[in-house]
Image (cartoon, rainbow, N blue to C red; front, side, top):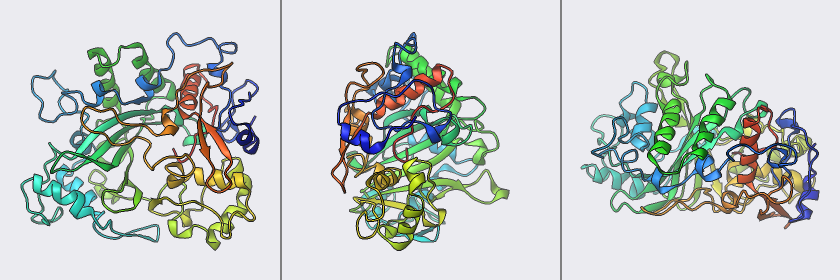
Amino acid sequence: MRKDLAAVALLGLGLTHCAPGAAPDVATARRAVLTDCEYLNPTLHAPLPTPVRFDQELLITDLAVVEDPCRTDNLASGCPSGTVGVWTFKALMTRMAGTRPVGVFVGDWLATFETAQTVNGFTLPARADARANFIDPWVVASGCGAGDPITGAGACALDLDNAPFRLLAIVNRVDQSGPGFGASEPGEARFVFGMLDASTGSALPGTVIFEYKLPTTRDAFFWASAWHQLSSITPGTAPYLSHLQWLLDEITLPGKMPGAPNNGSAIGQVRTNERVMDAVWELREYTLQGRPLTRNRWSLVNHPLAQTPDDSLNASGPLDAYLVANEPAILSETHVVDPSLIGGGSTAPLTWNVSGGSVGLSPDARHLFALATCNGCHHDETGTPFVHVDNRASGSTAPLSGFLSVAPRRGAGGSPATSHAVTDPVTGATFQYNEPWRRTCEVTRILNGDPDPYTKASGAH
């Protein structure tokens, strides 16, 4: 039973309710606009013995975790066996690199920002300030000279022990599991890192996200239950940190995704979201790619973005034709963007629309299409300044976007008590979201034994 988006947009804070009953699949699941969640309604489902605590098991920014003196420091001493540096950029890249030397693996990835790339037939320009603003400070801090190469013969050996990245958050996306989010895939786990100036250690306006597929050797119920145990343990304590490390090792260690490249790495994609290397915000995506005969030596290579046309196609004939022809699917949020339109970089601000304004396309269809793109979800359509988890200084908790920081507190029945209001950039209509509530609903649904999504994930997730 799907809510009508236009009606919901006009309701403001007047929340409506859906009839109970889980959706059979994501194609008929409810919108992520504010809605009643039957699994969080105590009159319909008995509450879980321990409620899902958003900040303990779904989006973890606790300094006791992200500044764990052992797990986030490659050079720590006096630590329990097996804990040193396990949540660092270096450790995760080493696990991801397969049989390639990790320094070469990282250098090849970083070099893609310095030269133009071709992704799906579209040119992805070089980031003009990549060398001056990020690469050279790291090169110099590694004992090499500014301008020294980072790939090939004579490449600078980048200091990975002190790589200029700071852990910001660990994120559980088991809410993405289910028939509509990738067949039987049980969701994702993510590490969000902030980019640093290697010469000063100061935070820069950019993040790098490692997005791992939860291994399909176990189902969504197993993963949801394993994450949910964190809500029963006091945050920041040794038992909490130990359980979290066990859980993340089950995802990130080599061999956890049998048959996958680079010794069975479960990495799905690496995303960068920054305006460090250029004046314009840009999001890129990288996946492991290579030749079949060298399957354990693949590299991180630019990859087409999810559901996001190349920026050059905004308000163009080809995009117009797609939007008008696929409006019913867009309105039901079952659309798949024509692969020939997909680009390799997504900049902001950019307001997606048909040429000549929204003529021939309903306002709801424009919003839903744009919300599913990378730059729409990270800017105009959610009222976000391009990062949902922002960078931070040492000793400070990472700020969250309004879209992610609204409290998942229950109001009447199974409805959230609060919301994040977003003004449509074209029509001025108001949409009310509570993404933490939606994710809490989905995890509670999984823990209740229901495998079918109850809501539709907002944006390109």
